[in-house]
Length: 225
Figure 1 (spheres, rainbow, N blue to C red):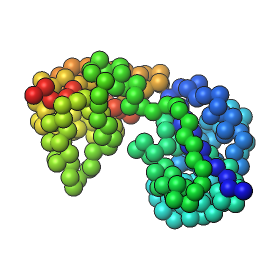
Figure 2 (figure 1 turned 90 degrees about the horizontal axis):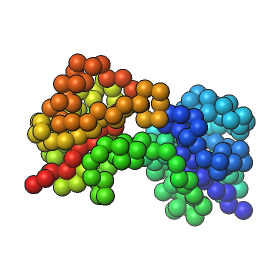
Figure 3 (figure 1 turned 30 degrees about the horizontal axis):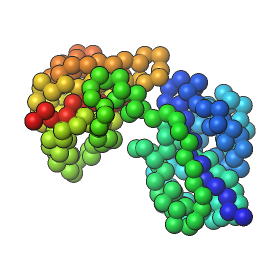
């Protein structure tokens, strides 16, 4: 009898941001695939869940997929989690889901936390239509993507790290214009959550003066032209 893979979103900040169904699935799993077992241990201990974990991350996912598929086909029930948020959204997950689909293994994805949705809604920018970009390329193709995003007629969303966010905002200001409206949301669902709204030029100045800390979501208004 074939097993099942369940992708389980986990809190991006407050540990209470997890569903009752997600907790049940984690408890009933034979194995939990974790992006970082050390990080996931904190969540499992908090909810008194004692299920074996296997590491599954960007450095081993290509090698591990065939073995995991074999175990699923053998009847194992596996839950997959990443450090925070929904697996597959700028995190490992896609390769395994694709392999399961090709092998005829059942997959279910639970609804739950992901950083870009609350950031988008909280930005105050139009969110009836939007483009999710995730992380920009660090080198090759970066300028091409920036110019593409600058021309989009809809709001777009980026993820960025604290030590690169000022550079990112500066490049967005150059590509889109310093007057383009935007919002920077950091530390979503955590103690120091903050949303800073304003023109891109103003946001560059703000985070140049105020040291960026935490994980960032950048939301930018679409091209009005």
